[in-house]
Image 1: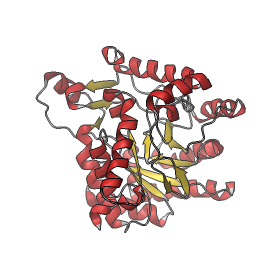
Image 2: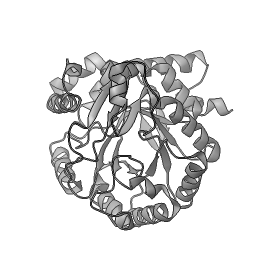
Image 3: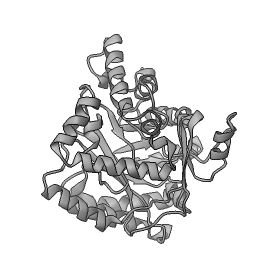
Image 4: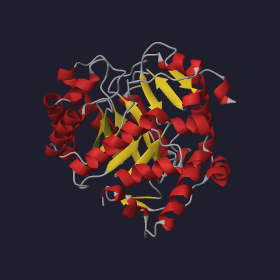
Length: 356
């Protein structure tokens, strides 16, 4: 039914409904009876996960439905992107569905109420005992009104504000929808952003992982240069990848119309490049730091490919739009079956198996 109305409106209705249902134990119980995923335990960043599959950033921008996502079968969630200052994002319409391609195009532009407002809502959630037991990540972006020269202070301030309300953090320096943001992937800017965030972590005293989210549109050499800078700056992991501005020409007229929109493309067309980037990073880092694989994961097969390519954790977004919440348990059941078929003791043995 939601697919019959405007994409952004459908998104808002879905998240708002889950927020309300997730606030009650009865509501969560009903969802769990329909959508709960099996256990396929793994440990990443020193944290236990029920299974590798989580919700990608951009779906729960305001962190409003955190209590409900585990009931849909997710083992972890990434909220945001959150910016230091509130912002409305880009003009509407700004989210489009290409149904035949199982793809989305969005130019949302980090629309969110700002870090302070998000923290206030999370404080309230914790005080009411509605904090989920699953690991939670916060996605942090640069405020649109802040220049790249001032980005280190912008990212580190948001990190500081949200520190107590996330188990790990993803620095989003790769969204195509904030002008100039992708320039932060260059060594000069990147080292300063990571240094400022490391200073916050040192001051806080309780170590939490900081990850970097890469663009799929970088040349391989540029990608590895950024990865090297990040590793020298003490980054704990990578997320591969963000949405892409590259396009092919679909045969379907509705999809061609959507693909002609400016913004980031996600979903099935992103799968090939995301796999390439995960493979590249896994090789380059010699499997020493975890990689989160995201982009085009919509089946047990695509999830298995991503894990075998080197992803310790995986995420989905578009598949939830096109297949509904049952896709989560479907993928995890498929992964569990593949672990057994390949005689692995656990899912961790499958990470990077294509490289062995």
